[in-house]
Length: 404
Image 1 (cartoon, rainbow, N blue to C red):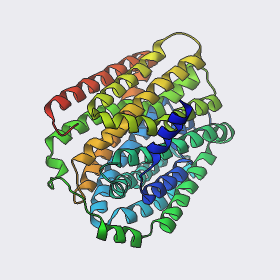
Image 2: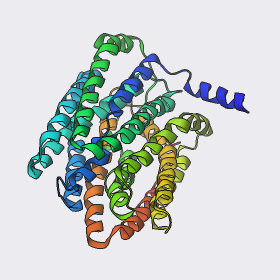
Image 3: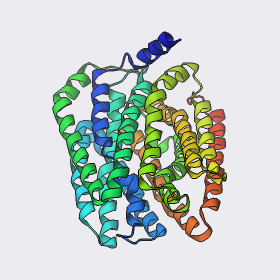
């Protein structure tokens, strides 16, 4: 049994390109410094900054708005100048701006800088998604994205756990760590994946791709993006309103919050690659997404259960982690299957934009709802919206033969 499990793990990681591993390693370094976003709401509502939850929600909404614009231009520049240059410039620019944001104490300037930072930072995503698709094959593409997610979540586990300790000492240091790891990731990208490597691979790589179609005219894909926006609006609460609920209503400290956030990444690192390797063979992509969304709905509804705060918060994290593992890798598969080398930047940009819209609307609307009615009502709303999104994916699958 143990030997079979070890073999399964080994097989799950074999067959991926060297470039995919390098991209994932670079992402690991970058995400190990991801400390600002999960603690931004706590930082703004701390005694030092003294802002309300709705004001913090507005800042996070600006972060989402900036990501929409950044994703759009990131996709356009990816198709025009290539994913390498876009990744390099955005990592450098984002790193510098994280450091600058940490020095600003004026609320209006924080709003402006957060918007600009997000615009630069999120332009990285379409380029990175395109590079993963480029350096993978049709057979291992889902696992290549899962490897990248593994690196992100391993980095997230490190960043969140250390970030909790750093935040308990001094919030400003979070911005320095996040900025410097961005810059370090840019250096690794420049050293390991220089343009000549990309150009060399482009000259030899061939792939049968679908007919070139503008992503903006793909009606099925646009409906998919609507559902993605609903999902992201809810999922982003894990990093915005939920930490404040953990601290203020459940009376959990920053160190414990960082620890349970880290558990999210640790579980993903431990089981996602093997699970995806097993599930993708069954060719039921839509089914896994629907199950994942239902699990995420259960995660928010679980916060309505009375009981020990540490156990309830842990249960919530377990539910949303399993939901994330089930849904997100196969969401990536959907847009990749509909794109090719000529329009992949468009598809990746719109995919990132849907996340940006969710990251804009979600924090603002839910934080406003919490200020007006309380957290309990918000959790019910989140559960209902995720259930609606799950039903939408069920309907989308019944009308789309491309999906599976």
